[in-house]
Image 1: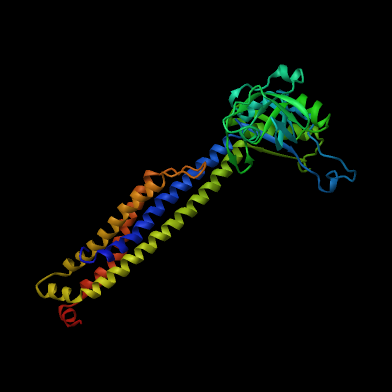
Image 2: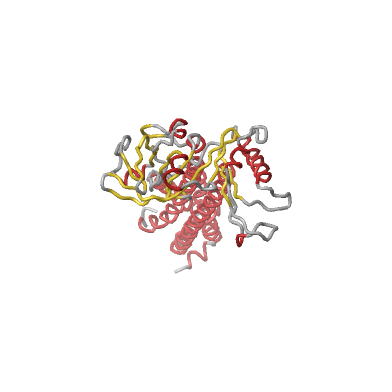
Length: 395
């Protein structure tokens, strides 16, 4: 190995890359799983969301007269009735619109201006960085107050600016900023910080008018354990208010945080397994490199093998010599690969933070040793089978 340093280094390189890839890609997969879980949890605490569903062709299901599918105040009142839905502890209707926001000479096209009741903050886990959320008094008085997301603050002023107390215009209507939300970051549902939330009564009066349908109804289950029960109760209540028969499909869409979390975790698991498979392939390719080099080594050292056997070396002596060499190369490459893989996993890419698993370190190191045994066995066995006469005759 020392006499052929470059060859030994290149042999170890294949194992090094494979081992580092296993650790790094498993860490990335774990990081993605954690990121997905965190982003879904930001959607709310035990939350269930209901959207109106557009009917096909504008036709009533099962009928011929056209109707518009709506989520009305009657639906909200029915969902808030604990006798009908005991698992639901809070209901928040919301209206969503877009608006041109102007503040201190800066203009921003906001796509997500939300009008909601004060309990929306609790359902949505809308924690504040500075200021306060609007309350029942603001809702009752139709106060022109607003809570801004971090992205909106950055576009209108700059990052880290304290916007509390500032005046902003939404499509010509002046609002006072009373709070700034904590940063939640981007996810598969878009930038969660690109939002402004104001009292529902104010948005109705000033921007959208007295519309007859809500954009979304957010409800909160009493606990995570009864989230599915709360969703089932909501479906039953809305079937009654929408006068849907048991055999008719729903005219609304409904999903809960728990089901999204489960789906996200399953998708992340599949992705992690895919990454692990790619890493395993690279480790397998490194093993082939070990076998290739060892076969070349056996060929080059055929006369040496013959001399050793002529001097009394047994088959086990030759076998162990080449097998130990292959395993040693694999272990050295594996150790370096572990160090490099752990080091690279400390790097952060945006919101993604790879998480190194101790199990992946142990498994990758053990597998690198097994690769040395497996791929070194054939060349070592081939060397051990050579007879002294055949080896000494070899040129």
